[in-house]
Length: 204
Image 1 (cartoon, rainbow, N blue to C red):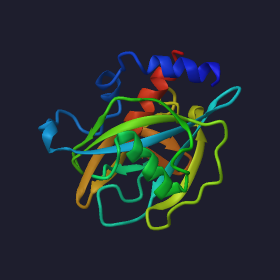
Image 2: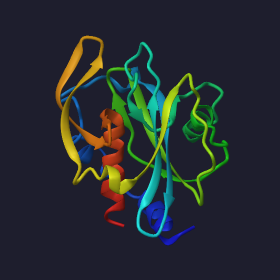
Image 3: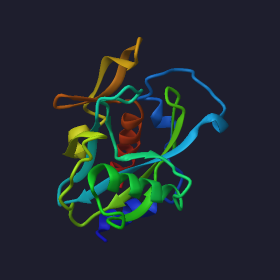
Image 4: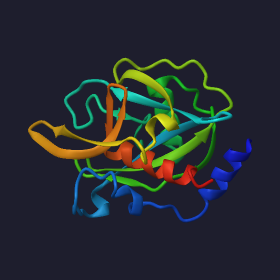
């Protein structure tokens, strides 16, 4: 494990920024629901540290009749009864969506959970570090595009922007904070997760 991997692993054992930084990219203000109503889910943040930057994997979801159609996301999804735990959920979903072998990557910790009111999911992000990324194959039913990028490409401190987005049919959110990555606008839970990751890694 590289030095930065070790520093990040140690940092994840301590208190996380959580809602104090999430609110900077939250598309909604003042929402509150009972936690018990949320369904558990997990996403995988696959990282590869190189000499000058950090590489990671995002996906563009396929078009479908649902709240997260065509959105930029981390590989992940809802927990199944057969999953050993939420870390396994993140691994299983990565295998199903981008063809990453379930055992690939060392899990070094997790970030703060994120609540998604529109779909009623509670998302826990797990961080996996890799020596190399294997060849990835997107599940055509679930994934339109696999996006490899550098953390500097989605630096939430310098690349924050605002855009109107359609959260679901007929619901337009105005001036939503997010990150522009080429032709992709990253917002919602994914932007919250990326921002917390950026805040932590910048201080290592």
